[in-house]
Image (cartoon, rainbow, N blue to C red; front, side):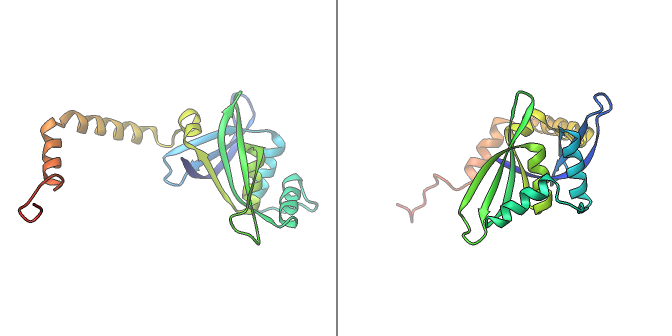
Length: 177
């Protein structure tokens, strides 16, 4: 299962002094920080600010090549974490043949920079979110979790029987016989 996300911010980790791109889901519930290199941080920042360099940068060149070959960037998927590095797939679709796709393995930072330039979707696999994301609002998540546990604690087996009896399944009437 994939979750659509967007680039929320780019900054510098206080401890490591390394750039971090922050992805957020559309509901603003989960945050996925991804540590990246300086060049990728610059490329992502320029794309976020819609800054066009005087000469094409690497990601501008990538997009130009993709489009010149008759494709468009359909989606970027951050699909795994291997050896503490995020792995992504860039999905290209033939511009004149919808449905004809090509997948390219990429670093997450490069894929994000390309997706921003192409204005395409960024999605993250559920497994990656479970492993590496954090709550956008930990207090709200803790309250919702406590409320849910409270709700579960109040449930009785008879509550389920009442729902099953009201569903109409298994009930026979004279007309059914």
